[in-house]
Image 1 (spheres, rainbow over the protein chains, first blue to last red):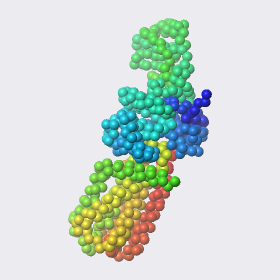
Image 2: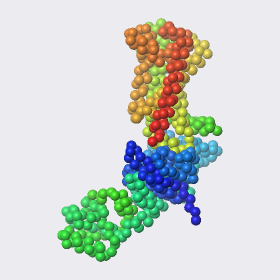
Image 3: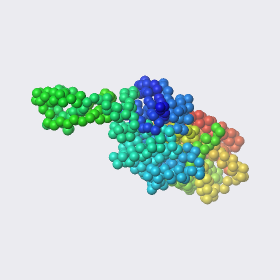
Image 4: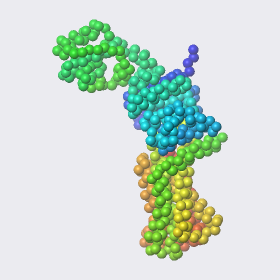
Length: 311
Length: 259
């Protein structure tokens, strides 16, 4: 079986003022899927999006987007993509309808289809009532929906969603997730960048983890979680003095002083857990409560991005 | 084929900029009030004390047009600077459109705003007794002078707007452009000024533009030079500013949108 890739990038590099922001990044996104691009602030997510969206030229490397060479044929790439930015890219002085009309005209939607196209998008993105109000008066969630509606004026092959739910309340976030799921039903390929691991878990078919300009892991959420063997052991102590003493004994992956808990990666065997509990008890800092869970995407993220454990 | 897309894209951008201008209540209100208030102020408050050889309103109209254009240039610079800091620029740039249409939209909207202000000045002036002696062809020539001047100033303002790192910085162009006409022949003849100022006033670029309009409308300039001389000078100045500003704006635009 032959798979079609909407994005195929190899060896992308970019430096700013001598600092390597992207360091030989390879990326492939299968057609009709959502790739979640994860990484801490400054990992290079936005730079990668800007390069693939033709806003910036890479220093080295090459990429094909929707079948067109990014460097040789940027204009054809522009025809196939749509960018929904980190900073909502709508004209706040124009109404929602006028925003859609402006983009539809720039996308050369024919006059006879104009009214129907706009009405359909307003309906689909739940903006009918607000259509003739200035976009500046919209709530955060409505602006993002308008932003997405603008991106869907002509169904693009690839949509970039650069941190689409940053700053939204949980309800608007869930609404937007539903909207994004609908896009993929139309066969649109999505490159989603996010700082929220839950968002990637919810939406992404595959995930690429970016850290300091390198892809440090790629695969499905399930595959990534499986790279961490065993179980995570959570230990709760009766006072914060015990927490600090325990940190010296068991080298935890995460420490939460406020809840007086630490998390330790284990192989999941009863012997290892019993041994650790015994060691703590012998040192005079017995655990008050324990629980065990499967590793989450957070654990993968923290283990791969070399972050300090949360203090 | 290569011509049509930029025309279609520009039309969309012009509509966008005109809509935005209409909905900026502060700038819109000031732009409408400024010509009226300044006209009444200069003619009725200062005009009585000024000796320009004839009714002051006959003297002052070109000066007020230029002053209002200075204010309009500030609006344009701010508008361009605002667009540069707006997320929508990235959306436009990621679309298959000609990027120069973004600037064309701003320039045409600027022209429209300024020509409306000009016609307002003319309308108010006629209302309070301005009676230019110009024949229709001279009227046309005077308006053409205004249009060329406003076009050059709009591109100049756009270049400043692209150069400025903040919207506030872009606004400072208003101050310079609204101050310059005072030290020209806009409001009083140059020969009434102290010698150093007079040399500046006689040779700065606003003066030939003002004198050309004055010459076409009233039949003579205020400083005794010939209309032909002033007109050639004005056209040369405007074209120079236009060419340099378009070049600078293109360079600044490319610099702002690439990295």
